[in-house]
Image (cartoon, rainbow, N blue to C red; front, top):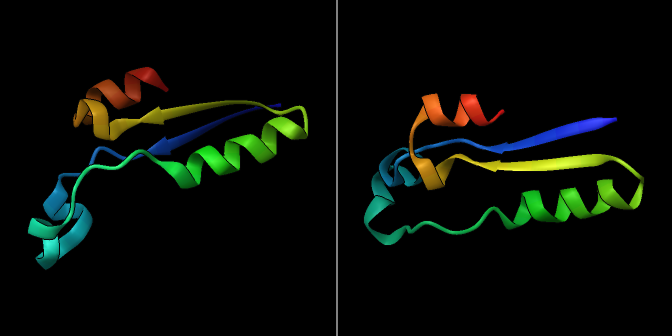
Amino acid sequence: MKVVLVNPPLTTEERYGVHFQSGGKTPPLGLACLAAVLQDHQVDVRIVDGAISNDYTTTVADI
């Protein structure tokens, strides 16, 4: 089985709402934990971090 976990390319304002000035970009650690568990169960996993490109077109192309 193959699985793609996607972190959407949201701006900090979209991600944190009114608290966007206190938010920052962080790696998708939750997705990394899920990927580790899936790999333990012999699942082929890929993480696409859309926050790096901050562009929906690039993120969809990566998927």
